[in-house]
Length: 367
Ligand SMILES: *Cc1c(COP(=O)(O)O)cnc(C)c1O
Image (cartoon, rainbow, N blue to C red; front, top):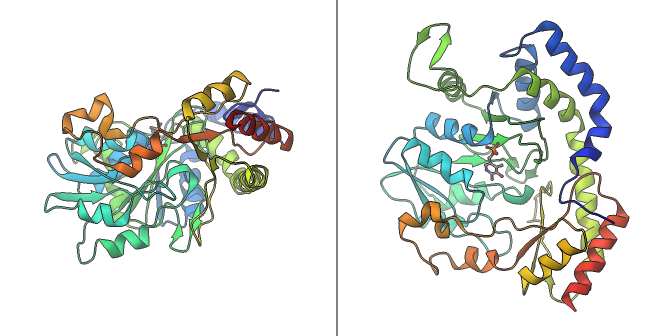
């Protein structure tokens, strides 16, 4: 048996017919940029997240850069973000010429620790970025409270959390502005690169649209220096079909997560992930923690199981960000987790047999 980390081919069998019709329509109308599917997807995705506005863009990294720029982040400013996230969170900050300021995460959920984030805020801080990692909603309400009277904007990185909810509300509607990615392997994935920015603030939405389209709302009238990051009509057409499946796919991920929980409950030596109270997790990743992780990972991979690590190196220890001079010991929780985390395969179409095989192999590797 082979169990990939994600199975996009299985997903395709469910959507292929509808996607073919949708893609044909784009070619028939030949509106490849800014076609009706882009506007329709923006409306539908805004509705799905509960945000007032959605702007479709080229990818998730651009989406975060655009969200930060629209929130007022400028060259030389500081942006607080968690030490363990995908590097794109920090890249979006660096591309503006602003400085990523890392903060540690909480040990239970590996999400930005509100107290640590608040402690990292200075007079130069222009935004704080909670990342809704692994499909969990980061505690944005607690973060807002920890930030106290400071009016520093909260910009969500929702690349891993489409459809996730918490007591605070839905991911993508909790900060001043939010970004997401539709990279194919995300819970809602395009057939290539795409991303989106969501916000309740019409001015922020307008600014994002402006920057992402050469600073121009009307052809050849350029209000500011922008760049080009638009969502392709083809990607919007694909995403509209898949958005109709998102709630069901997220439900199936929750079933799969519960099944792993039951299968691994009695297995010694494995720490299971948990959902925070009030959190309706969408299980983008199922991340356990084990000792001797590299050996366990190698053994699972040899057995045909696509287990992986998200992410092997906290950002302050990567070559890309070592210039900040933060060594080992700077963020103990993120560093300790990086040595033990192990992502097991999870996706809506994973079967009970596949999960039993993963659980058996993991238990055997831990003996
Ligand atoms: C995938 C991802 C991104 C970047 O998205 P792209 O579409 O690949 O540019 C940003 N942040 C996080 C947390 C991600 O997982």
